[in-house]
Length: 312
Image (cartoon, rainbow, N blue to C red; front, side, top):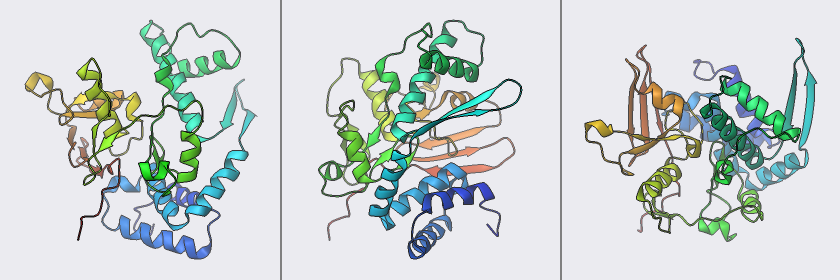
């Protein structure tokens, strides 16, 4: 903070993640986070990314405590109504992350369907109207496939079997405790999918099943691999992002996992704006974006599976 790398809001996100930990544990998190930030790209200091990195470290330092605090927090779920000015109010739901993520994904899919049907309302207005319609039992006027409310949870087989408790991430959020991940996994509404990964790199290589249309398989593999929009400051889940050709199709770029990346619609369009430079290496998971002002942001997406240590 003394150098101005982390602003007050970013610091508050770190404090929120470590709230409830002992002083000794907080010092451990602080030490490990400082070591990571000392050589980290500038995108790491953005509040959402900073919180995600802190959450991952905290889950390693105090896994049992993180699980206990998550269970207490989940028991505190609630809905609040806050009246504001100009005849407007705010309705908020404090619910488990996988529930909120799936609910938002469904609302967003319905809003996009309304936009495609010709609505002239903004996406914010459409999402608000769809939410109100669903809560009040009204028909929003469009439908969305069940897959539109899918949220991807990545978990090593060892954690799924209860052998270990680490390596679990929820797209758009980050690390969650292993026991909480298993509770989500065993929910009757959850669907299992086997994803085969290269044990040395942690990169997905197969979905463990075949599809009639290869393009759908490629798109799905890219979404599972990237998990989120590859732009360093964006946390939009890849399941709600576009499949983007890194080397443009018009310039001979193949439609493949090695040339495909997940970019949200906004950043997909931004990539083609003048004076913006976007580079992404799917193999290394490294993304670099340079703005028209000359500022460069770099981030590396961690592998889906933690790579195995090489044999001695």
